[in-house]
Picture 1 (cartoon, rainbow, N blue to C red):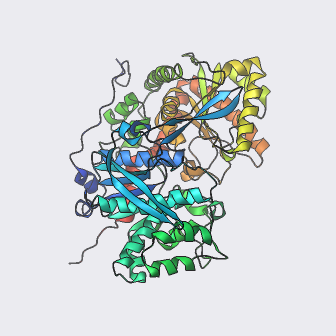
Picture 2: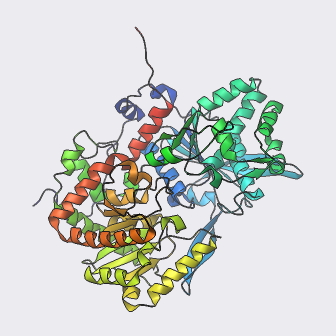
Picture 3: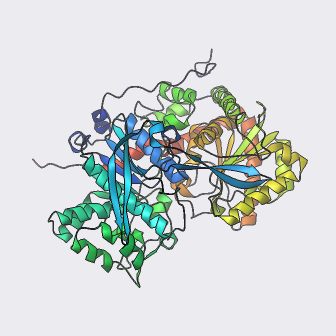
Length: 589
């Protein structure tokens, strides 16, 4: 029997890590044993987290990243606290007459094992204080600390610069900081996952000054203990609030007159973007890919360009990768017990033969079909993919810059590719509520598919995209299509899940894919959208040829894994954050 061949579907069992000191030693930060603890943890603030197993369903990639970061910390025994809202309304999608509609389901923290702690409040001018319920859930070395109240609204409800959005951000920042105090948690470091969480740093600044610290000393302290992780490429795309909104919703929560005056000085023409506060109150700043850190166009109060350090997003491999594939990586010393590539990972990858890859992909296809039989396509029917069919997928939020329409620009060409390759094309991803242009684009695509019998048979739009479907597609389809407009994707992690699951990737040179130059996959290129469409179709044909050939398949899968596995590793991501936030201490003799 081929030692690489898999004929069983036994789940991967991770190796035990005795405690975090093992990981700290490996990443050359042994001092973290004394710097991080249950009462003084790494605290991660986020407006969304996508962790359905724990009852919290975020809006997209930002929330998925937050969930993966916590999972990795738990596996590595790192003391880690996530402060986030618990939204009591969960939005779902369905397709009616080929158009997207939404419905809402109610959820509660108690249903998912969260324990009620107490109430804290946030204030607003002219209104009674809002009472926020604090819930906690402990998972190993990590905790969720959530705020919740019945009228909090859904994630991203209302206008980006509206009162309700600002209220949500204030409630998370000030309410979440009060919750930590209530629990006796003092952050060793705070990571702000995007600008919306900046009020946590403002709350910390206010407490220091209210307790007697000089304003400028307090600003220095907050800066040195706070990381701003930015996911947005253009400062102009960030929300902006009016002075009157801050006077109503922010100032009533400040105890220090010095902080209140400092905050009002940040306004220009009675307007303020919270990202300017994030820039002012953090010393450490990072973008989420090399390209993002280089091209993000942010300016401080003096109009100087802000420098972002690059820490590319990774994924929690145990969540997203087929267990049998992970077992292969471990058994053949591609990954170590922490989820980091070994010193010999390149040589080990190069020994994986085609029959191993094909055997593992067959297991993945079975899992995909087990999921699809419980889901609905655009006609509200389940889908079953033939075992011998080639499967392309486009699975990500339906946003214009991600270009879900690109493969449908020339329907006759797409149809011929699917027929020649015995292929199916799966679309999955929701339109954000209120994005009327993308509602129409989705409807146009589905009507186009419906108008042609070949496309109708071979193109499947799977409703209500979520973690379960995303994972099933990552492990069970053959070729991923990732074609954002270059310069608009901060990182993306869907492509990482695909490569880790032995899929071919067709991509533009954008986001985290562009960490490697030239990119180590099938590249979509061109000087115009028409050229890129031609390139996409050529690469789809090329992908079909590669999958049909053992030699080509191993060549391309090896190339992708060798190039990207160190980037994909969530343990690598956490290592990079810890080393960035806690520089090595140098001693002199």
